[in-house]
Length: 333
Image 1: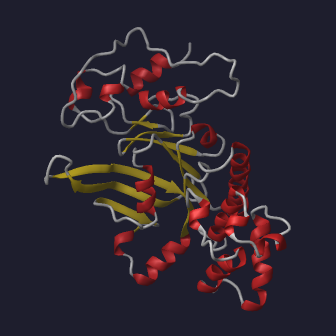
Image 2: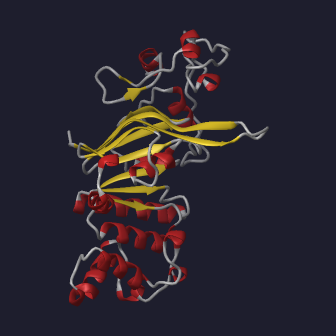
Image 3: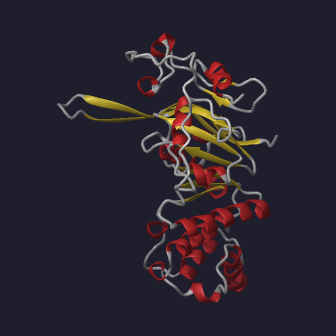
């Protein structure tokens, strides 16, 4: 097993806002008690619906947000304890690729100016070798011949080319991890496949790890080593085999909602085991946050919030009181 490089320990992010009916403050738990480890050289996908806390989690990993509770550690050192020099080094080691490449690139700077600014800021290469270095970076992300792109502005590039520039800007610092927040959402399907292939090739050649935030389970299945499923600020299932043998009811719901490659094929829905009877329960403080949408809920689900538990003989963790029972009941004979 690869060593851990970045970890979250009981991390929570709470936002406060004015109430809609008066001056009373309202609190939103965008991330609520997440424990997660990221291993060197792996691709970890974080998936879930909009509002599940994925992007907030990414901001904490990038030190754009400080967690309200808990700790984020890099190689065993808490980020909150880093000094100015160490913070700069961390930000070089953990880079970002954002959702909208057009917005992440300065519209008044050419590709050459954008990449040169980063190279000069971090003293990556001597000025005499800068031109050659920039061409190598563009070639590494599939922009050939590189001379055709150096003088272009962002608006003169397609969405896929803009995203490749953003990836080149991140990878040129030789980071250990790249946090990619919805890197495919603004791209056409054919371009998405090219970007996924590029990320896979970069991981093989540079051993860089990726944390990819996405709502597209189909795309993540093709690239992720492990996948963490988030729901209302919590990780409800994480593992390698969630696409083949999902356990948590929410994970199964997400997989059932995927579009099929064959539009004429019948959509396969997860069966409800005969021995499990959907129960109408009322939510209470401390209960499971998926209670009202779960067809397998029982009394304990309304009273106790389930914690991640490791499945027998599998590298999968599931936050469900009936995880082992459902895993056995939903496994085809």
